[in-house]
Image 1: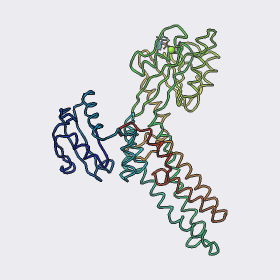
Image 2: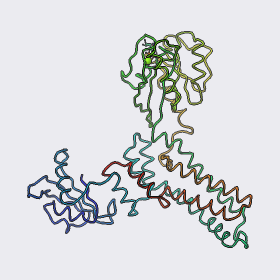
Image 3: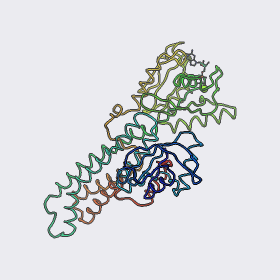
Length: 431
Ligand SMILES: Nc1nc2c(ncn2[C@@H]2O[C@H](COP(=O)(O)OP(=O)(O)OP(=O)(O)O)[C@@H](O)[C@H]2O)c(=O)[nH]1
Ligand SMILES: [Mg+2]
C-alpha cells in the first residue's frame, strides 16, 4: 500500500489515476490504473480516498493498493512522486496524526511500540497504550491535582488570606493520594522494560559443566560447540530465546578457571563482563564431580537474588550434599532434558516479582515516560513535605507546576520541539 497524505493528496492521485479521484466519496474503493506522464499503464490498483478529518493523519489521504512486487511498487511510487508528492520522513504520518489531535503523544509512541513488539506481552502493552490507557491514567492524575493547584495559586496571589478553602493537611493528603498512584504506575517500569526490551540471561560456570549443552537444549538447536574438552567455548555466544510470553538474550560464555592460554584468558574476561551485565545469571555446576575451592569462589561471585544455581549432569550423579546457598536451585540434565521445565519455571519465578502482568494492566514501557513520572513524583514529595513544613506558597506552587508539567510531557501537552523531533525520528519511514 502506498499512502499519500496532505492537502494535495487528491490532486496528486488524480494526476496518476485513471478515474476522477476528487469526485469519489470518502472511504470508497475504486478499481483502476496508475498511468505515468506518457500515458503508459504502470499497474492495476485499488484506490481508497479517506477525506480529512477521517483519516489516520487527519488530512486528506489516498491509499493506492498496488501489486506487491518490489519493482512494480517502486514504479508506482516513482510515478506518484513525479506527480508532485514527496517521500515521507520517518514517523511523519504519526507526527501529523499527533499534530492534528488524532493521537496524543503517548499514543503516538505506542504506534512504534506496536510495530516493534517482539513478544505477546509487549504487543498487549502497546495496544493498551494506543487505546489511551496510559493517557487516561495521566489525565486522571492531572484532574485530581487541579483543585489543589488552584488552591495553591490562590494562596500565592493572596498570601495574607492564608490557605483558603482547605487546610494545609487536607491539600497535602490529597496530593499524597495521587502520589501513591503515580508511584504504583512508576513501579511497573520494571515489568514494562522487561516486556519491551527482553532480558539478558547469562550461562556461567566452570569449564565442562555443560553450559553450551544447556544453551543448545534451551534453544532446541545445535547452536554452540560441545566437546568434552574443558575450555571449548572461547567467545560469548548470543541467541534469542523465547520463554512463555517473554524473549531473552541468551548468552553462553567461556568456562571460568585460571587459564594460562591467551585466547582462553580473553574469553574468560569477556565471560565475567557478560555476567556482570546480565539481568539474570544461570550458574551451571557439574553434579558428577566433586566441588573444588575455585567452584566455591565462582559461586560466591555469581550467586545473588538474580541468579539460579543449576546442577547439571544429574543423569550421572545426584548433586553434592553441601550445595552453595541460593534461593533458586534446579537439578537437570542438559543431555536427557530432565529438569528443563523446572528451569523454565525457576526463570519465570525470578523474573516476575508478582506474576506476569495482566492484559489490561497499564505498564510504563518507555524510559522517557518513566523519567517524566519520576520527576512528577520528586516534585510531589517536595510539595507534600513543604506543605507540612509550611514553606512559603511560591515554592509550593512552583513544585505543583513542575509536577503538572512533567505529567503533561507524557501525553504531549508540555513538550519542546526537540523532544518531539527526537521521538518521531526513531520511527520507521511510512509510519
Ligand atoms: N552425562 C551428561 N553429560 C553432559 C551433560 N551436559 C553436558 N555434558 C557433557 O559435558 C561435556 C561438556 O559440555 P559443554 O556443554 O561443552 O560444557 P561447557 O560448560 O560449555 O564447557 P566449556 O565451553 O569448556 O566451558 C560434553 O562432553 C557434554 O556432552 C549432562 O547433562 N549429562
Ligand atoms: Mg561451552
